[in-house]
Length: 378
Length: 90
Ligand code: SF4
View: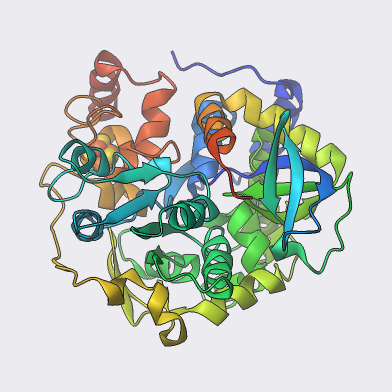
């Protein structure tokens, strides 16, 4: 028995569910990708798939920034943290992410000074308070967090700080979506577009998804009803033969995004020629690095990095999960060797990762995984 | 880290560039509002906060809905608020 969490709008959800079912063409199968890890979280928390007809499959996308950091970058960060007089700072989500030689937590246990911070500004504060130390901020995230890092670099520059730098691992969402659209393994019918990334980039950058790939995309909010409504909007487009970019989350997302945020990103950062994504491989122009004019704040320039590419563990199928080819529970180590306490892959680490979302909401304990896998085979 | 949390601006901290005192779920913290410099924010305005920065201006109804939703998702939200409590950016 699958279970559905009760939430305040459960009856409205039922109504939307009926409308969704009414829009589905009999015999047609639909696959929609939710790009953002925040959406994945909502979908499993509230059991939204249980509201959808059998012929709609939700596929989880690559929009969990912690999940896409490759092992080699974690190793590089630990290498920086292990240099004399360095304090590495990081969002809490990164602490357990395994690299080739363990995680930040393991490095701390081995004597490195890696501190959790809520904001890059906290890292800057640590730098101010520790003038004899070199403080590095492990910058991760999509366009949602990149402006905050950029503002912090600008602040550090304005203050003339000499002991603060960032290890820039910011990634951009559009090339990842394009890589998925170009991937032969997957045929998608539409996208649930990321909410908070879009507050920064706006809705226009998605235009090519409709115009070149002929797929609808609806930018969606994070509540259960938002997601159901955006599925409804995608289906309505398909039924009416339209294919457009629409904004279900207009109460938060401006169509043109946040100019100031985009401006501070481009002031301090530029696109890298290429970047490796965990599971997705190398994608060109898909990540940001610090511009030459802010070189003194760029940990990549200040520290000699090993920069070794580390292959994911053999057992790990995060790549397939991030591309939406496999459901988390179809990974062989899901819930057995790989759990949030002892993650093998990144999707199990962040609460926005698809595997952690499945695992944390109690739908798949060990025995239930076995049952589920058996059920899938028979 | 990807959660956006709503907060209400209590006062603009004039001495410090881009900072405002914001109440988030009863926790009062300095938040950077520099990314919304085009919005002319005032005390009483609601904002969506992301890693210490206000990312967009929202209305109160949206703030309430977002808050209820966040409280409902449990652990991830509690961790975010705990991290915010520790944050001292001013
Ligand atoms: S179960 Fe673990 S190894 Fe498998 S895909 Fe998920 S995170 Fe990766």
